[in-house]
Image 1 (cartoon, rainbow, N blue to C red):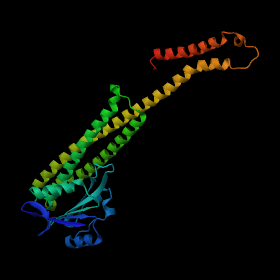
Image 2 (cartoon, rainbow, N blue to C red):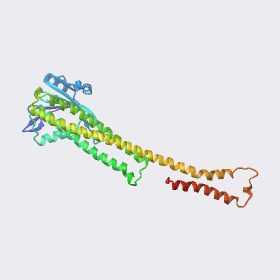
Image 3 (tube, helix red, strand yellow):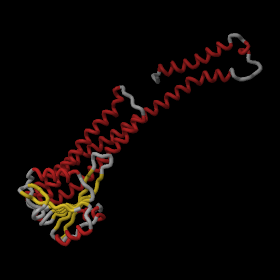
Image 4 (cartoon, rainbow, N blue to C red):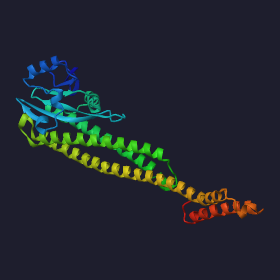
Length: 317
């Protein structure tokens, strides 16, 4: 689907006159071919966009500069998606090619349609769009930080005397795994954004990139690298929470094994006494005595009670 936008009185609106931004969402072959004829540029295919080499993600084609970044969508769902988006910076317009809908695109369209963002040309539009993407990632990182705080409180509640069953802790492990996977996607997205923003900042004067645009790109690079450091810190914290949760699960399992071990030791002496006097030998004098039965019962109770008291003294109960 193709959508064209233009600047009207400083606001981004659906194009009526000259087009400043063409957004291709799951473009058809016809839409791609018409743009290629108009701009004299070979647009990348979906397979080309998936390439991870720098030479395939940042390159020039005639008058256009093609930049591909991995952008995140559905971060608030259980199945976030990280997929490539290509920005074609042409002197006449900006073209974006995508096969998913990053949340930043929706919010940027709403914001740019309501307030003036200083967008005058394709490059300023690209930088404004990248800023919206970075701002969205910052919001996601902030939300993930709060989610890790909640998980940490839940994991370490046991230190305050609240014990969790291993099944509950295994559920927490799943949540930590989801947070870790999302954090990895965030860092991958930041890394790709860092590459293309750094490329813009290193080439003033090329493809219409002025010193002012370079300074804006440098600010964007600084923001991205700051978020990258924060995301890396969250990654370490996620790994720590995972190790701590696995340790608590092991402790719970050890407690269960210890309980059954103690029970087995406590009932072993009474079982031995009962087994001895359950043998059918002809000569067992105690069996003929009137005190034989109560003595056997007392021996079983005492032999079971002594190990129990010893384990309790050692703090195993």
